[in-house]
Amino acid sequence: MKKLNVIFAVFIFQCAMGQAHAQTTMEEFMAKWENSRAFTLEAIETMPNDLLDYKPHESAMSFKEQITHIGGAMASICQGFLMGEEMGFDHKVEPQTKEQMSAFINQCYDYGKKTIASLSQEEMEEEIDSFAGKITRRQMVGLVDDHTTHHRGAAISYIRANGIQPPAFRGL
Image (cartoon, rainbow, N blue to C red; front, side, top):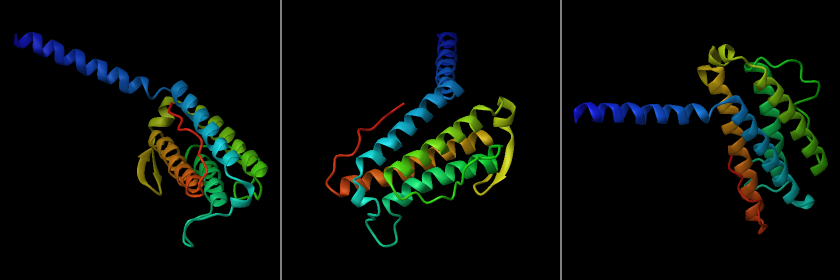
């Protein structure tokens, strides 16, 4: 009976590890990345033009600033910590219209996708010194994703605070 329990425990562990690995493949991450892009673009499209400068408190970023920060930070982190090449665009730009914001976000997501996809497994596992401490590039990729989610969530809450139905949540 003990041997059967050990075999079962090993089987469960292997299944769990397989699931954990399956959720972190580059192909799956890139699908999530594209979904994140679409969700961000939907948020931009949903917010009315006359509310782009809305912020719930004087100390908060405006909707426009939240969205611009998503793109600028994404591009900056990809170049500075994920071995990104020359951007070919100004990541410190301050778009003023929804069209400019959408174009900027697309540039940043394209740059991030190209940069992240170019990293080898060995490069992803290399430890780097960063503003978050000594972490792997894989962890930095996760940080970029989490940072984007955080600021997009704030932007979406601004949409809802103005009585507007925000875009539906997108999972994977």
